[in-house]
Structure formats: C-alpha cells, structure tokens
Amino acid sequence: MFGVLKRIYVFAGSRRPLFLKALAVAFLGAVFGAMQFVALMLALDMVLGTREASPWLLLGVMAAAVAGRLICFYYSTNAETETGYFMVAEKRVHIGDRLRYIPMGYFNKNSLGNITAVVTTTLSDVENTAARCLVIVIGGFFNTFALCLALTAADWRLGLTAICGILVYLAVTELSQRAALKTGPERQYAQESLVEAVLEYIQGMGVVKSYGLERDNSQAAARTIDGSCSKALALENSIVPWAALRQIAARAFSVALAALALVFYSDGSLELSRCLLMLTASLMLYGELENAGNMSDNLQMLGASMTRADAIDDTPVMDIDGKAVAPENASVVFDHVGFSYGDRTILHDVSFQVPEKTTTAVVGPSGGGKTTLCSLTARFWDVKSGNIYVGGHNVKEYKLDELMKNISMVFQNVYLFNDTIENNIRFGCPDATREQVVEAAKAACCHEFIEALPDGYDTMVGEGGGTLSGGEKQRISIARAILKDAPIIILDEATASVDPENEAQLQAAIQALTHDKTIIMIAHRLKTVRRADQILVLDGGRIADRGTHEELISRPGIYADFVGARKEAAGWKLG
Image (cartoon, rainbow, N blue to C red; front, side, top):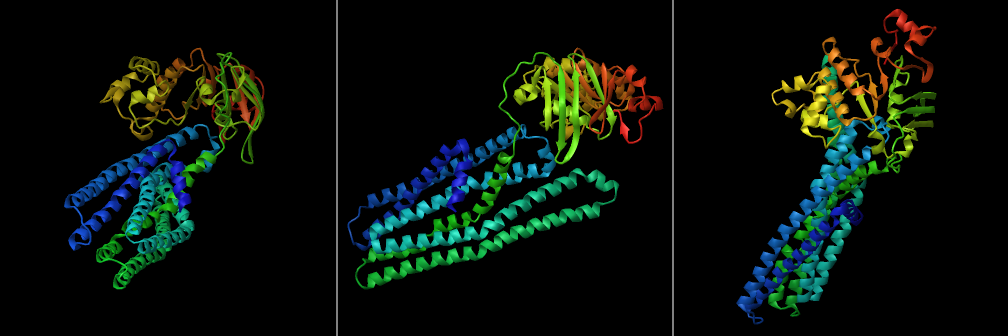
C-alpha cells in the first residue's frame, strides 16, 4: 500500500510541494480532531465534578477544534484537488511532447484508441482519485493515531489497545492490496480496450453501414463492454472479503475498547469520567481510518494507471540530443539508405541527390516505398543503414525541431485541428499576424472561400476539418506550409483525390508554395511529373531508373510503358 502511495507522490512531479502542503494541513486537522476528545474529557470532568474545569476553557477548546477542522478540511481539499488536476495536466503535456520524438512505428503498434485511453480514461482516474486518495489514506491514519495519543494521555492501557487496532487494520488493508494486485491492472487494461473498441466502432461507422455489418460490429463492441464489466466486478469481488474483514477488525477493537473501559472502571482503576470518554471514543475512534481503508481499495487501480501512463516514457525515442545546426543550403542527399518495418525491408541501398531549388518527382508501383522515402527525409523514422543529409548535414545532427524548421510537408490526407481556420493556417507559424495568415491564404487560393464562410477566418472547421471539402482542406494545408516558408517542400500525392473543379486552384496554390524551393514530390499526374528536374522510378524499394521525362521515355522501362499507355499501369500509380 505504502509503495503505491509513494508512487503517487513521485508521479506528482513539480506539484510535490503542494502535496506536502495538503498532508501537513491534514496532519494539523488530525490534531484539531484530537482536541475534540480533549473538549469531551473537560466536559465530562465538569459535569461529573471529577476535576475543576472552566466553562470558558471548554468552549474555547471546542470552538478551536471545530473551527480548526473546518479550515484544515477546506485547505486540504483545495490543495489535493489542485494537485490532482495540475499534476495530470503536466503529465498529459509531457506525453504529448514525448510522442513528438517517438518513431512513427510506435503508432502502428499502438493504436489511436490505446493512446487516447491513456491520456483520457487512464489519467482521469489519476486526476480524480490519486491526490484525494493519498491525502485521505494518510490523513485518516494521522487522525486516528492522534486520537489514540489523546486516549493514551487519558489512560495508557486503553490507548495502547486502540493503537493495536490501527496496526491490525493496516495489516488487513495490506493483505487487501495484495489481493487486488492482479485484478487492478486487468481492470485498467479492460478500460483501455473499451475506449479503443468504442473509438474504432465510431470511426469505422461509414464502412460498417456500407457493408451492413451494424449488428456484427455492435456485438463486438458489446463483448468488449461485457469484458470491461467483468473485470470491474472481479476487482470488486477480490476486495469485498477483505473490506468486510477490515470492518470486523475495526468493530472488534471498538468493542474491546469499550469492554476494557468497563472492566477497568469496575475494578476501580479507571475514573467514571474517563470510562465515559472511552465508551464514547470507542464509537468514533476508527471512523477516519475506515474511510482511509475504503479509499485505499483504489490504490492498485491507480498503480496500474500510473504504470500505463509512465510506459510511454519507456518507449525508445529518436536521438534528440542534436544541435541547432544551420543548413548550408536546401539540398537533400540519400547515401545508400536502407530501411525496414520490422522484418519487412522497404528500401534497399537507395542513393540520390536533390540539388537546392530543384524538383524531384518520385514515381513507381504502389507499395514501392515512395511515402517511406519522404518520411525518412523528415526523420519520422531513423534509417537502418546509410545516411540522409539535409543542407549538407546528417539529419541525425539536427535537433528534430530544428530539422523540421527546414521542411514543409503537404499530405494527400489532410488533417485539420478542431479550431478556427486562422489557427489551422497559423499552425505553420504560431507567431504570424492576421495579415500574414490572410496573405498566405490568398497565395494558396483559399481566401475567397474562407471569406464566404459565416465567420470567415474565425470559422471552426470541426474535428479533422470535417466541415470542409477535400480540396478546401488541401488548400488550407498549403496555406499553412506557405506561411511556414521552409526551404524544402515534400508533396505526398497532394493532388491525388482532388476533383477537376478544384484542380486548377490547387495547382496554382502549389506553384505559390514551391516557388524557388527544393521540391520532393510523389505525384500521379503526368503533367506534374514531366516538369520535374529529375524523376526517380522506385520499384520494390530500389531505384529502378532515373532521369528527366525526355530521358526516361526514350528508353524501355516502367516509366516509358506508363507514358506510352497513357494510363496508370495495373497495380501501380505515379505517386
């Protein structure tokens, strides 16, 4: 139990001083709680005439005890709530920063639903429970122990009996924690699977409906829900017997305390006022400790939640110890590069140069490694062999942030954040003014349709840009890249799914983006490819051919076959 409590404290990070404040106030509250028994003892002495007691002293002690408890409860609750919210907020930001430096392969092995579960459900458990759990568990122990000390001052025999009750209760609680050690993590993983399954079901609703699989998919989601329910019940079932045993232990020592008080009174070794005090204390003594024990049932679940959240820190990151390197130019060089996804080799000994301010088009069959080649340039992954140079420096020499300052990417599938159009464009340059955003939008040929929207640049685009058409989203992404003004542009099939009505405007936007830049493009339109300074034909992860459009069509090969047929070859596309 105390190991998990220590983990909660470590997990608090920079909020540990606030945690200590909450614990200190909880301890002070326990002292005021013990003063209630002192007030009760004075009251009994005064009523029974056992000792002289001033009514004003009695009222003063009672007022101080009640007021102190209320004030301590207020500040302790505020401190534990603030600690919980802020420590989890910092953890979420930390995870977000960490994900920026994790290889993209991590996101293939760990689904969106899994990551979403960690930063939402998993950390919400920690946010709402961890700080409160730590303060209540330790505060409950403090409070009960302080009351026992007050009783010890009244009669050491009964005080020691009460302290023995605390020790037995803590021992049973520790056994309860061990019983929940297995079921707690299983319940946590079931919760994450539930979030993943529901998210997958919602995101795939279009496919589900189109194939009439609503019943099958809903049954799969229902099975996941049932699994989560069964794990939650298993956790509760593993705890309930021990919770009952804790209650029995507390009640047994309460009865023992009352019985001993009567025995000692009957043999004359305990005054009547003290006997009545002990009888009253036996009914109240373990109340705070029982609250602490009930709250401690959440500890193993919290431990599992913190383990899942910390697991991202165990994921290997790419080297982030590079330097703020200034590129010598805007060239890109691949030097005998090899790359694999696990055991599947994607690129074999690829070498080429993209001189500064030239355009290189990458074409070839689908699955040949074209997108991987572009992603390696931006260091989304690290190469398995060989080297990649940007601006005359190995990409591994750069800090990742510094490397990405020199590269803008426009993808076929555009993602826009659930924010205003202006902020989505400004994502390319967070410090840009409204005027600069508008200028970039005009260059990307999207100013007119933005102005026609009800709120103009302040229009919310919805999650993923769902309120906009594909061509509109594409032009906004180009405006974002124009605003960034990086010297190297990577276009990954940027015009592949654009309708003919938008193509002219999109081509104009791309020309504005790529003017006087170094370009690497994956494209499937012949009129785009033929203007490139060089064309790389990638087939099976190797460069099968290279040259200008005129050079490639003048000799037999994949490119010449494509151009001659005037259509995409079966099983591949230029892109």
